[in-house]
Image 1 (tube, one colour):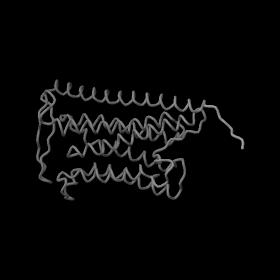
Image 2 (image 1 turned 135 degrees about the vertical axis):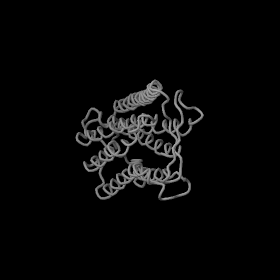
Image 3 (image 1 turned 45 degrees about the vertical axis):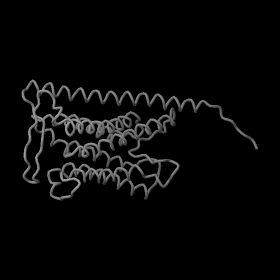
Image 4 (image 1 turned 180 degrees about the horizontal axis):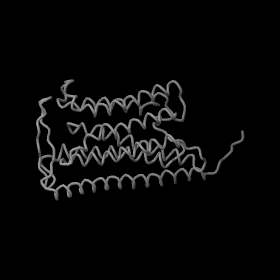
Length: 282
């Protein structure tokens, strides 16, 4: 991503969006339980009682996507159009998010309703499909660089997002597909933050044991690119194992948090549902 902000901004944004979707998905399912009225959504109005802020999530996605594209500039805060050529895959990824948010915004203005259409689900599925097949795949080609292992694990999370978005589109009444989609989005954000801390803050002062910093020049933009490479096959195994452990720790923390949140929201909904109904006659 070029800079720490290049990881931090999209990572924090995805984590917030994932958390927002987790809360609203659980709340929507709890309010409709046990009636089969739950429907998967790919965006949630915020808040429900204020129509002026109804599309805040979509506007947030567009603003953050444009900001992330700007932060891909290695000359930040200066701006040079030629500097985006090596980052064209990342630019396309964020541009797809802009198109998704913009098309969803236009669709809601033309056909405002509480349920998402199949068109929005298909568009969301295509966004994550392109992330998996065309954008992140280029980072997994060089197995000598530690960074490729982190991007490979990120690609696994993106594939889960793609598959769960596809299932949610085909089966909009499935709560499990919807909650898996929300958790995977939040995990992608947390993993972006973890990669930013690993590559932009810990290098070169806290390099993984057995790894060395390798710097190569990029003549097209006149900048140097640093990467962590393995000193030996044994070091490669240990470094990849550490990355896998970090993957497991973050995923476990998000799942535990989701379970606790689900129990709390569902318990509160059942308590409210059991309250006696008082009829006042005038």
